[in-house]
Image (cartoon, rainbow, N blue to C red; front, top):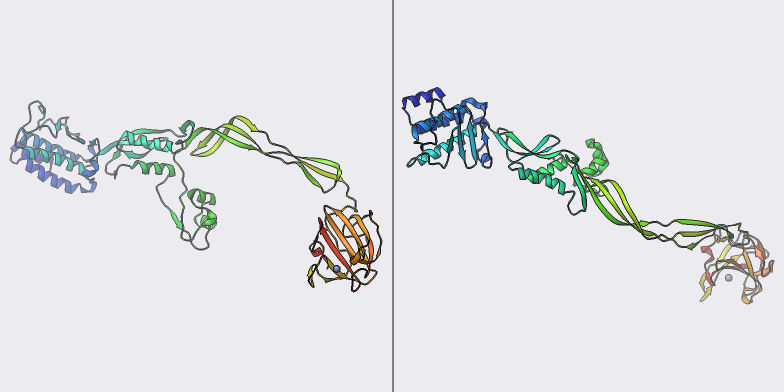
Length: 485
Ligand SMILES: [Zn+2]
């Protein structure tokens, strides 16, 4: 319906305002259906502004109101004294949650609950309110609310200033809660800003919790890869052209080595829109590692390292300012250090004296150039055999298994002609059943030095060498110390 037609009808007084409103609204709503937003969207809005985006719709509403005012309702004295169909420029309708402005009319207020009609016309009054809401649903008004502004860019659209402020507070408290924070600030300019949104683009108010999540991740998008057989972070990074480091950042809960088939890997690298800088005071204990000092000792043989003082770590108390960005330490300023316990220096005495061949090297060599083991170490015929027997023809050279001092050289019962050599560190070797002894007690012998000739003396059933290794007096299997082949 055209404005002029309405005005004509008003002039002629031919049609009731209510009927005209009904017809006008039906037609207009149908025509402007494409820009509809639902009245539910307006429930919590403070303002709904009409601009000249849709002059036609605005005009119709204004005209309808004009009709309603002039031809249906009896106004209370003073309330709308200036309202006349000819000079109306705008009409303001106020409901508990809405103020609507029709900009083509001069300002006038209609309070919904104001008794526009003294009696009997309540229905018509509520129809107007309904119609105005309908009008809001086919125009595209701007909505007022609050946003979180980060370096000039708005995020979210909140119903109240406190909701927007809550988002900022939560972003901050994520990194400040339960800590001894001296200073905390955003690197960016972060503030609450009053803002408007095109209602036509408006879907719903932002949920504060989700806004916090969005700002911290820099995205609300999900991009997931489901792990297949044989895949790892490296192959996935190749497939999607992102670095392994970024994959790790995107999946802080996943241990790359323990990736499972079917596991969901996020490909969205979080990039927080804000950087929360915190300075926290930290008091902690720290180990002071001990030092090791090596002292050379000319009276000790080479190859000998003896710890004379064992080291122990000390401890100190440190007071520091720890600077973090979004929880990650970027700097640490040590304010003070107090030693609680000094470390003890470890002292090692290192021998430098040349080791003569007549001192045991700790490594045994076989006592003969050749020959085979004819009887092993261990229990034999119900008797324990304390060494090995090496079959040899009489007169074969017997050699010292290591450097050392001869402690016995002589006839020893069943052992026959025997030599015993002490090599130090409790190691003694025994050579028995010889035919001739070539060193005497007290002699220093070197490793490989010939000490006897083999034979068949003592309890022996044929020429052989009975060879023993004793450690601190206990016979050990010589084959654990020497190789016969
Ligand atoms: Zn034997």
